[in-house]
Amino acid sequence: MTHTPKNPIGIGIIGASPGYTWASIAHLPAITALPQFRLVAVSTTRMESAQETAKAFGAPHAFDRPEPLIEHPDVDLVVVSVRAPLHAPLVGAALAAKKDVFCEWPVGGTLTDTIELAEIARKNGVRTVAGLQRRVAPGVRHLRELIESGYIGKLRSVNFTGSANRLGARRPEALAYTAAVESGINALHLHTAHYLDVALSIVGEPASFTALVSRQFDETVIEETGRATPVTAPDQVALAGTLRSGAILSARMEAGKRNGASLSWTFTGTEGDLALSNDLVLSGARGDDQPLVPIEIPDDPAWPSQGDLSDYAFQTAQLYAGYAANSPLLPTFDDAARLRQLLEAFVESSTTGRRIDWKPS
Image (cartoon, rainbow, N blue to C red; front, side, top):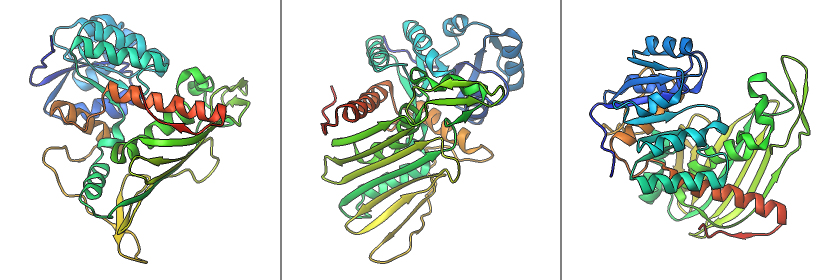
């Protein structure tokens, strides 16, 4: 039986700790700004912190365990916003209760986890949201529309280049767990997943590719203690391939960059070019030898405006709005499973040195 949310939709957030957490800087402000939702309950590992968050954001219920939040009859959508290794069991519990689930990326700790959770969601007839929020950002949505309308003509190439200053030779104690590949927080499973997804959500999956997934840091130093910790997580990813349209796809992601970290996406066609900057601002040009100029994104009343929201909260609000409207652009657990399959195929290509003809199962 399909779970039918009420109006406003009741939200319960697992991992809503106060302070600088993703729930506090992205989810909670987003929910507060959207009239389609109401915050019903929060849970953390300590009642004191749960009550602090509940008081700050007006939630009537606070719990120090996830189970009563999941089971609460007023919670329509369970949001899982905790460390990635804890996602799978919490998502599984919410799906077993036949609640709709919004889980941060990565949905599961492994490919097997992710596929199983997607299958359970389909079996139980519930809706899911995977935290791939950039694919529904206004600049990305408008770029998709421009490409589909023929703004740049026939697509010739897509390129993503990115770097991040974290997860390198040094990291804070709070990120010490990311040194292990099993954490799911690294250049492949986090950065490449999020940022390459922006491009692939517009132009589709590759037809074939070769990939390099590399680890250059043997250890990382924990900043607060000076303790050296072994690193098993990759910090470099490079990709060269073709899309099903015949366009060329290239991508490069580097974690642990000391200076000048940045992100950029470019889309080249027979008639012009489009580009997304680090903050997802859109620019483009048609013809020859023209400078790329900012492209105004038209207002769309079907989606929320930014207002006073930070970029993080604004992008997250787009996901919530997409869920409320049942938008076909919304990333689901099925999308998460396909993306995770693709990431593991990158590892296979890197390990074997083979070019992969991509036919996801």
